[in-house]
Length: 115
Image (cartoon, rainbow, N blue to C red; front, top):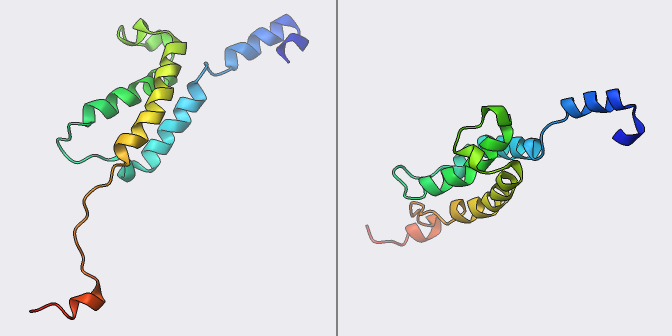
């Protein structure tokens, strides 16, 4: 569609377009923030570093490339997108592990328990 526009207008449209992967990463992070309680880890969890590493590419993708840290510049945008895709697969696996819940006896059974 850009090829149908005059060159000057096409260049202006390109300047206003979000960077590759930026909207997807922003949407993913909105979901993570919205359901923050479902994504939370127990305090002092050994998985916290893993979760941070999975989310880092998403933060890089929503940041303009000019503002990337030297660590983020080691990868190009395509590599950050690839890392974010893998992170999107890995995060639910680590965070969806069953957590222990307090035992609550069935009220019907509880009546027959010895006092």
